[in-house]
View 1 (tube, rainbow, N blue to C red):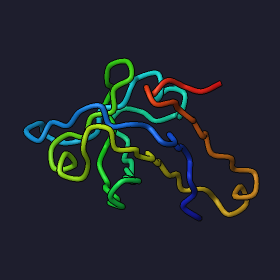
View 2 (cartoon, rainbow, N blue to C red):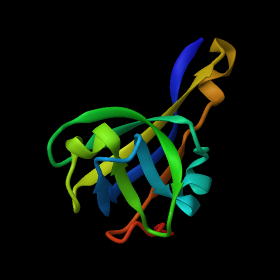
View 3 (cartoon, one colour):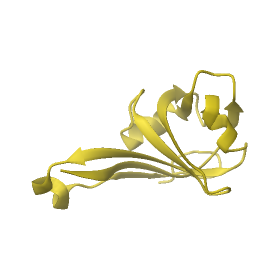
View 4 (cartoon, one colour):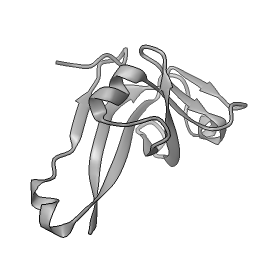
Length: 113
C-alpha cells in the first residue's frame, strides 16, 4: 500500500478566516465536488505565502469560499494563495493506474476550464 495524492485544488485564495469556529476549512462546494473531496475528509493546506502546512478537515462552503477555521485561521490571511490536498491509500498493484483529480482555479476561486 502507498499513500498517493488523490485530490488537489491548486492556488485557491483564502477569502476569510474564523478563529472561533470549531475547526476545519470551508471550501466552495463545487470545488469539493470537482476535486472529489467530501465533507469531513482530512486535507492538507499548503500556504504559498508563508510556507505553512496544516492538516484539518473539509466542510462545505459558499460559492467561491475558502475559509480557514479554528486553529487553521492562524496559518493564513485573506488573499493568501493555498494548495489543498487530499490523499488515498492505494494497493501496490494499482499505483501505476492511479490518477489524482487536479482542479485549477482563478483569483476568485472559480474553476478554470
